[in-house]
Amino acid sequence: MRATILTEEHAPQGSGLQAEHGLAVFVEAGEARVLFDTGCTQVCVENAGRLGVDLAAAQRIVLSHGHYDHTGGLAAVLQAIGPREVVAHPAVFGERHAQRPSESRPRPVGPPSQRTALEALGASFRLESGPTQVGDGITVTGAIPRHTAFEGPSPHLFVGEGEARQADPFEDDQALVVSTSRGPVVVLGCAHAGVVNTLTYAAQIAGSPAVYAVAGGMHLGAASDDRIEQTIRAMRDLGVERVMPCHCTGGRAAARMADAFGAGCIPCAVGTSFEIE
Figure (cartoon, helix red, strand yellow):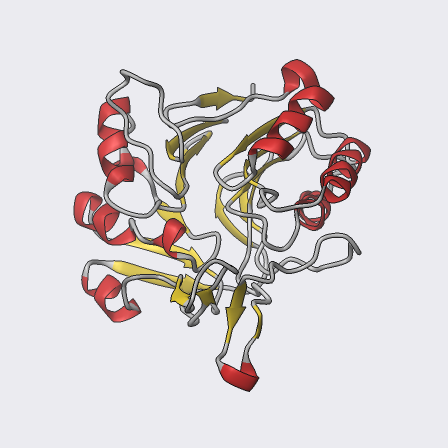
């Protein structure tokens, strides 16, 4: 398999590639081609062109969850490559907000385009809550069970207003699981369900005792040192050998993973492409 980062917060200087807050990953496995998330704007399409990645080869698009930085580029992708099946959880279009202590009022962080507008551009939505095969050897997890005690919700991300306001449960959070001869490779959007919860469920779906590699956003930027350490220990217990952190993983967590996994940790900027034989 091969995965190429099309959208991420960092781009190599002088590369002509653009960085933005968001994530988009082009995944190839055998004859299957899947675009996992679409970033925030048209940057995904433009970077694909500069990298020589044929977005039109993607048989379908998978959305990890309904945040603007993962769904915002969907309209531009559809306009560039034409109608496609879009696989997501039924809760992907739910209204959601964010508000950090420094912000005076909540801001919307859901998909910027309405479902009807995206369907007019050629999106054929396949909304599934359970594991869904999207290519030979490629499965979307669907909703992820929560078991760990240390992977809790983010207090600044919520749904509802006033007395109905509550932490976003992220029912729609899901990941991509790719089967390889070395074991499952898991591609994360933000892992709002928790990195360890996600990897544990991915191994279960793949029928494997271990996970070989994990790549993507891990939402550990604001995590405590204890949570980061518990995450790394659990990843080791799950047999993880290669770690490719990017997007919302956070600098501290990425640095600790580099210490823990050594050469097995590969930081990912826009344009990074990694292969698993």
